[in-house]
Length: 399
Image (cartoon, rainbow, N blue to C red):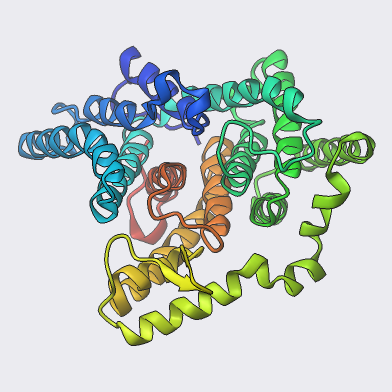
């Protein structure tokens, strides 16, 4: 299945998308110049570059409308987010964060749907992501704390890196990576770094997503040859062996390793998540029309986020939000499985990445998480392409 878009993406668009994907890994302000979240601004630039009036799917009116919307809301919205947050206006700041996530989602979807050739740029950004984490991993490996890399939270960090690692595994046999042996070797080393980083985050959601993603690639992707499956198995075994050999020499492993045990997760109620989810359901029952953009639930006198995408939708937007969130989850789970079953290697990368993010959204607050929305945007664009090419659901096949 060789996909050729209606036109080649410009070099400026390719560079912008590369910077966007790479900048997503630098969440902690300590690892950003002047503490600025560049990915918000780069997402706007990338989206504007995608709005090419010559592309038949976009009318001139839509282009003008999108330009006005994005420039006025997102470019101006990000400073307003920091201004309102500093003044305690949480509802306003949360609204701008959600709008920024919508821009990220649209950028991911349109970039793949219009220019599937951009997979090569995205894959290179994933390899650069792994390279950027290597020195951070080596410098922090003896700290004894849960590893969060260039993120502020190890759970989000582990889930995102798990999705990138599996995307690279799925894409190892795509023409963009497989043509050169040195590129594939670098990809394997990158997967090794990412796998160790995910393990040291000791995130249950990340490890679960990683395991389910590997299973999905073995079971659901029928076009993989026996040789390809064996090579993936070798990579996975190598990562596990490295962890077994290195883990005893890393401070804090024995203390944090209990988090990954099923008995520990049950005893702690998923680190209190069961108690939070119960409180959220009570709030939805008492407020069927929702609370507000920045709604939180109080548990033992402390305000908590919902730690679940569907429940978060219900808490903020009521029963309607609960239903919409569930439908959204099921729809994109179906997209992920469809792409894994019928897509080529580079499209399966987006399928498995989306699957890991969907696993993460069951235990994390993702409504304004840029990484989640960009990954699902990529998945949506890949689904459109694969559906059209395979002629699924009565759609005419395209060359």
